[in-house]
Length: 153
Image (cartoon, rainbow, N blue to C red; front, side, top):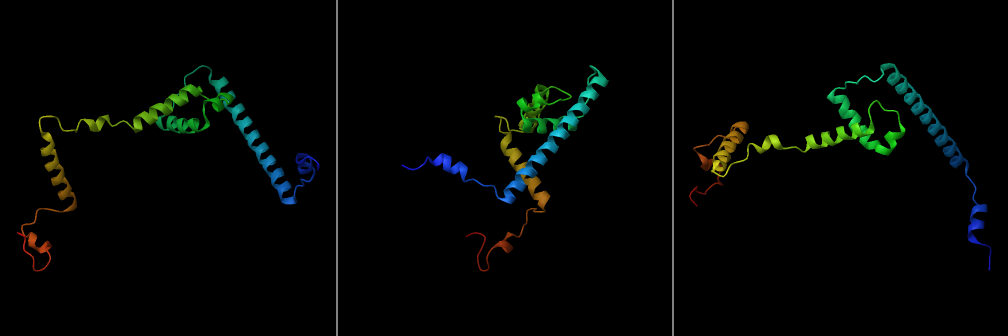
């Protein structure tokens, strides 16, 4: 029997110069990103200490941005970061954002009731469509027919 394939495989592995370059570059980029994250966390912590326990008022747009980005990170990752609000609050904002997006309660009021308003609404919708696209009823419909055919066929 020959030598074990695992030992031979490890011994014969050699990094090519471009692989070594990519490894060094990715390590450097990762270190830079970690330093930026640490700086941002320190900056946020300083602001939180300066403001004390005061409530931070955010606009709806600011909450929306934090909710989308926070959801992408996940609760576990946000727990490791310094945030101006708790991760649970950010995820609650996201749940509300999703609920608002799929809430059709305002359009439910337009549904026809059982008394038969449906046909009236259908005719009303047809009139609106024709008015919007300039398709009024034309008394001379024979111009739409193929040459030589009559409208009564």
